[in-house]
Length: 108
Image (cartoon, rainbow, N blue to C red; front, side, top):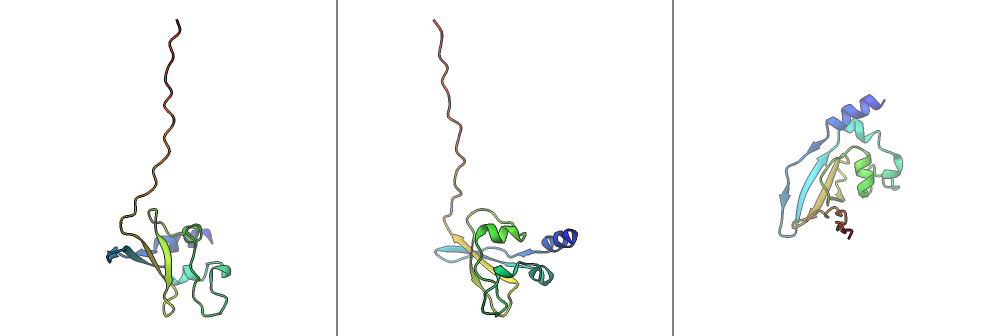
């Protein structure tokens, strides 16, 4: 089963980015077979068959890989395998903390 899952993850389609004045956007299209493997708790309880908005760790957990700053902001009910993402147009990833530079002391 994990081999099939990996095959489906390799078939995830990432759109080109597009933008407005505030955000850049992209949509991610999951293979329909992968959608069937997503945990039930990721779907809306109203039985519409649509995903609820997923937190970053959830969408990364189903195999979506993107740079930092993207948020799943909308679902497209007619096509539940299409996830819509956005991030601030001027998004700057957080910097990694640097190790403290230790000075050397001289012994007299």
